[in-house]
Length: 391
Ligand code: FEO
View (tube, rainbow, N blue to C red):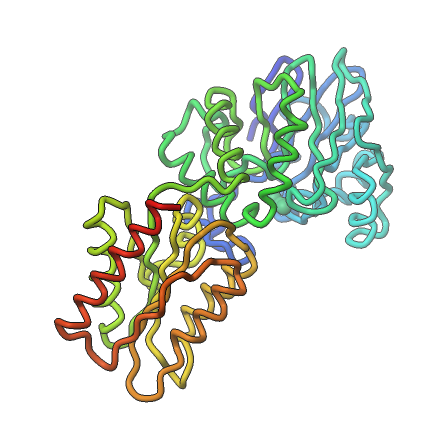
């Protein structure tokens, strides 16, 4: 396994995790990478490590450039274990000091009490191989400890999780992969990891706008060097809550009634020229649903009633939505019931708690949607489309 040169003295020395399909609850059908970087010079500096089971990959790639024992300094941009869990082994092997943000030092001490860590202040710089490494705190993007490391001479930003994608590939750069897949994975990553921190994203982009950046060396997936304006614009839009004329109709169904309702609501939405995505839970996991919600102006949730409340898969989704707090979206609720009802009411409460505005009354059908109810579903769809167009 070999390192990949990024600039004259900076190498990618990370690991490819082809097989991960669930990253702490976020489904990753394309696997992931844990990107670490090596900077060589009068000092040899390792920027981040990899998830512990992949330590051998890290060491092999470093060995293709230098003896790992010759590493003088390690920078930890983020405490989460997919990047930090090989720090202790690397420090034992090299004796190198670890530098982290102030919050990073605190977090790393809790995870790895034996680790020797020194805190660096926001804006502090060190020199290596004729180049500068400047540390930039980016709290809550997406942990309190998160920081960027910037190399002005290479116009390169080690951006940590920001701009990442869970995308296992042997390609290392954005111009070597399918751009459709790349942006789809970048959007899914943002929606599932970074969505609650939109205000922080906007602030960080303002801070980063003072930097001349040509390479974004992220910690997951491929390095950005061609599509920088596009990914920066995407982050700016996502961070500011920019959406388009699009609705997501997401639901589950026991005997097909809620499916029939979803399809008619979607038809009503589409009949007004608004884009609509219909997703059935059980067939579609919540990580993908949230990716579709990212640029949608309306989220329309349907549930059958079971035991006087919503269906469990719908509960899972609305609970997840509540945590991710998508702002500025319209919500609407529909569903079917047999006798007591209660499903739509339970969904409404959770969507309100998630911060969605719910201007329409819930639409409920007893047992089976006959023609009159199908017409009501179409009408609900048309009204949702009109609200989307007005907002
Ligand atoms: Fe890739 Fe927040 O860790």
